[in-house]
Image 1: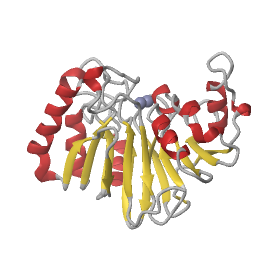
Image 2: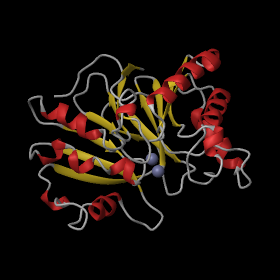
Image 3: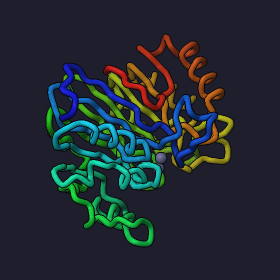
Image 4: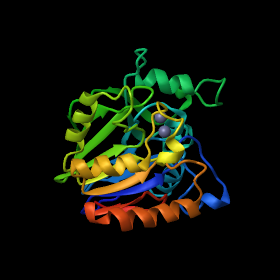
Length: 289
Ligand SMILES: [Zn+2]
Ligand SMILES: [Zn+2]
């Protein structure tokens, strides 16, 4: 089961922020919320980052193949757009399957299991956690680097409205950073220099950064403190930090394909010389790392 590929690659299953948006003008970049699959070389274990609605399509693909399915889901934080797809991930209804779910502790002390079971109560959904057939284990993730099946993961906390991980995956000599929700604004009144120093170190020379760029500087006006970035600030910061390849994600649900296509062309042309590559993340795309 899984893909025993030779090299690291990743697939974007969902690249939207905030809410799914299945409008026809969004179908090129995709309407599903955040979910990324990382393909680990020589491993049958599935590695998933976030379980927004994009995870449904990934699950459908996985259950189409024979054999049991096992892997880990690292959730950055429990905002709806990062967990809403979880109950629609079909592998959790197969009794032979085994998934471990990881999430940082929340400020009120709620564990990963508390949060997912709170979301899956009869009030919100017909299926509760105890009705799920797969073997599920829950880990309240620590930020220190931990070793798993062919990769290591560590995280630092983002500048977001709740405890939110920025995950760094070390695999096959590469560093991949997944940061779908993070507000970069060094000129904000309450900007914490220590945070930006740590963030710059965390991004230093990473091979691939997937980062929130929900707004531009205009649309960011009036949304300071909401926990999301204007793409201009992200490009600046990533270039300064020595990021090699930058993928902007968590696209605003109101940013249609025309707008995103124009932005994609613009950032490639204007900032291409500052990175090995720079582009917008697009649902359904698989890229080698
Ligand atoms: Zn989000
Ligand atoms: Zn969020």
